Length: 318
Ligand SMILES: Cc1cc2nc3c(=O)[nH]c(=O)nc-3n(C[C@H](O)[C@H](O)[C@H](O)COP(=O)(O)OP(=O)(O)OC[C@H]3O[C@@H](n4cnc5c(N)ncnc54)[C@H](O)[C@@H]3O)c2cc1C
Ligand code: FES
Image 1: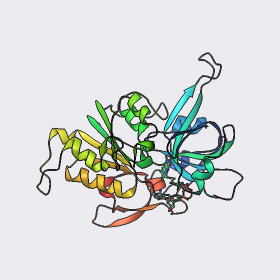
Image 2: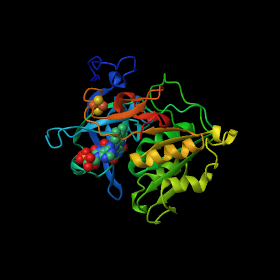
Image 3: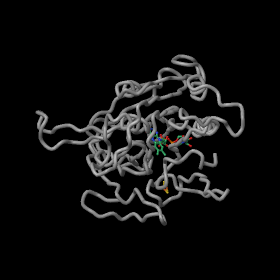
């Protein structure tokens, strides 16, 4: 990790790129802070180094300074980044802001909700691998609960609307179509849905109580849009249509496991962004481990902060 003035200090995991090496550790002023849905808040931070470097699927660790409760930072996905001219006339050196969306959940998010515009938070990032989507015609984003925060930038970038990260980064091959299938408990929880629509992403909703979209789970929604799997096992579906589809998913573990099974049954590649609890975000504490298959029939614990949070869903031992 580096501050604006120091060199990287975090050690890489053996043989693995360590995203923590290039992360910035910074104090970031809150620029805007608004409630956007039931229990859901959007936070804009003035953190130019993080905003300039972040790619879709990466996250930052956010901590409230001068407090011991909660003592630890929490991971939040970088939802979007913005550029703004500083001279008021479209010129000057641009400011870059990073947006985060959070659901009020426990001690950290309850405390964060009360922090006003103008105050500063401690932030380190961007962290994690982010999404690496191969060239694909149709990308299907599958969000559960607050999991949409990891997916907006990915959809935008796959449609060729926005380029994230450093200018030197190899851009992904655009998709012709991006669909978002978003499941929530009820209609009041779809915070940020207008951003998806404005980006040209086709949005479909499912709610458990039927208050918006299809009544049911996001897997019911996928079934209604793409049809049931072929009844044979292993599936006979290996058509140009399924080969040109790719699923990117973020949400609660049981939902991601179900989406992974849904995709596997149709031989559709699926990446999941795991929401493991994290304490350090940079590979030191092992709080964030997930069971990841190693290719020889076994599995091992992997730190999702430095080897993830995005994994090929077929490698996760749910
Ligand atoms: C890479 C990554 C990106 C994330 N991005 C976002 C985001 O953009 N917006 C957002 O709102 N949240 C996000 N999260 C989840 C967020 O970091 C946790 O929910 C965080 O713990 C909330 O802090 P808290 O103190 O409010 O709740 P806590 O007090 O930490 O937790 C309250 C309850 O939730 C449980 N819990 C905590 N974390 C998790 C988890 N990850 N999965 C399941 N149960 C959990 C605890 O066991 C406890 O029962 C992300 C997590 C990861 C790993
Ligand atoms: S959060 Fe500490 S090792 Fe991953």
